[in-house]
Length: 279
Ligand code: SIN
Image 1: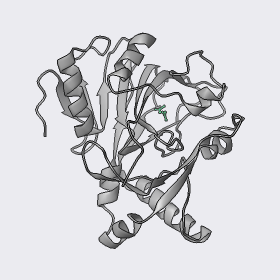
Image 2: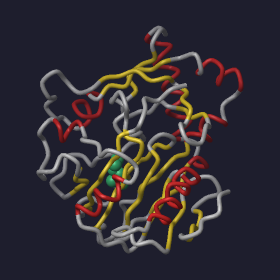
Image 3: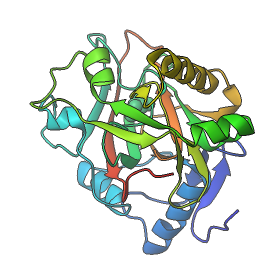
Image 4: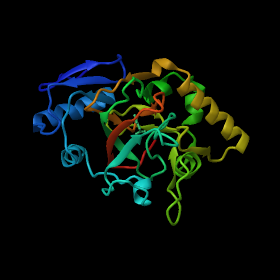
């Protein structure tokens, strides 16, 4: 494990998730950004407490990792706040759904999905709840049998934005529809070089080349493997002014909506990946 010069890192589990102390995300030094880049690859989910950022500082933080992403629902004009690079994560007693209330990887319907997302929660539900689970997709792959790994390594899946955004959230699609793209079922993380199971119940509609019943059975098996293997996951309990930065290339997450009718509020900035997911 890498040694960090300028930050303190406390693991949440031995394989996924860490709390990071000793950095002000509103003005990190170059040395701290270098350590954070290493910690991001090492731990996949980084949790920062008691951070105070305005929107520009939040976006500047994201830009250390690349170009900021515009969410397809923001691009479709459904946003409440007039900045396409900020996604509101807001749940109230009037909400019909809460974003991400199911296992998923963000926006895998894009040809180049976000490499990571930074969610800054400023308001937590007053009577508890609202945690987020993050699952390790390296381990999800590694726990499969060798014959299954080999078979999955030959497959490509379709990821369709209409599944969550129309089917789940009931939004009106933009002209031309939400994005729909294909990715290998097993991809290699561009920085760690490790293999990742890359299908998710949020966006993956089917596997190419299989009969519909075969595709459904295989996806259901893989989605169950992710949902029913608790050792894959770490759990982030939010406090006001917590920012969590997850590596979208090797994790899935599940926001738990267990706090109705209370409110939870945050803003998310995501960073576009520098290449399409590849085997
Ligand atoms: C999301 O980005 O999917 C929402 C995560 C959360 O609200 O914890």
